[in-house]
Length: 434
Ligand code: SAH
Ligand code: SF4
Ligand code: F3S
Image (cartoon, rainbow, N blue to C red):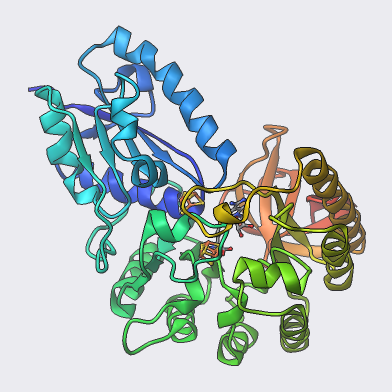
């Protein structure tokens, strides 16, 4: 009997990337094969994101193009997984005669059964959120060989008023430290060079006995030649203990992504971010004093409901005060059922665009200035992959998460090399191996 082949495409955050590896593992151990060619697939999964409207729009566009595969092979099963599955549910099946299965983030164990039923002509949906599911016992199917994502907690209890994640991912729950460490040991034996501990709110990790700094310290102790990163912490839960663990552990990378969202206390309050600018800036000062050379990055939202020009100026002012190494910058996108949805989307598109452009300009100037200081210096880089721009060049990252591009010069993926920097822009350093 020939084996059914599964193809999967992943949208959204790293948590989705990690979930895709869980899904492939579940399908693989239920006698499905895996293909990276959609036209050869018997099952096509799209693992989706709902965080902003444009993320969903991209998936809808992609779904429209999937019709061709149904035409090619009417028996193909099309599944929508992830956050849009959780948010839109039966709508995804009802509104178009295309989708056969809809499965939310906590129900992936049901996929083989639902797919089998779909082969028999029955559409299926599973979107219950769980308080306990963390796929602790499932070994994700990884193919990278160098960098691994390890999902250590799921869900989010923070309920920032703009955010759909608590609704699509459900309540916070953590894996046991033992199971995470077992995974790190296996990755070390397989020759992995970098791990990133993942969670929507990763530093609220707690397995009943161990907190997040305990987990980080234990993960880093498994193999001192493995770099340890983490994503994404919430500023409220960045403890002195966590800062101490990063500062005192050489293989925990000196880079922290610390989403601020806005520089205005009034807006932060409306967002339910639970910190003030003063508290946030004090935290930044503590981090910088404890971890020399630490790189900080952030997320910013432009045009939250009620945001005034003064609020916007406060955000710009905060960017200039903190001087982040990098930032992800977004236009506010209203999400149904969130608290902010009820506040009305009252900042016009034009003003949102102008503010976002402002923010991007200021941030890019700062990042360019920070990176220019590295020209002439030599940095240690883990070689990760071929550069997107040239097949003669490698791309890698420094300990503090700077992207570096350089001619291959005999180095191989997975090597740690010293690169002398000749040029820099806001996002990338360019140099040669010394
Ligand atoms: N748990 C993480 C990631 C959340 S989603 C965190 O708290 O940082 C990643 C980023 O998307 C958020 O930090 C926020 O800046 C942005 N985001 C979330 N909802 C949004 C919305 N409705 N409109 C615009 N940006 C949004
Ligand atoms: Fe969303 Fe806030 Fe939770 Fe991050 S902390 S996932 S922004 S609700
Ligand atoms: Fe998107 Fe869901 Fe991640 S909404 S950002 S894929 S948790």
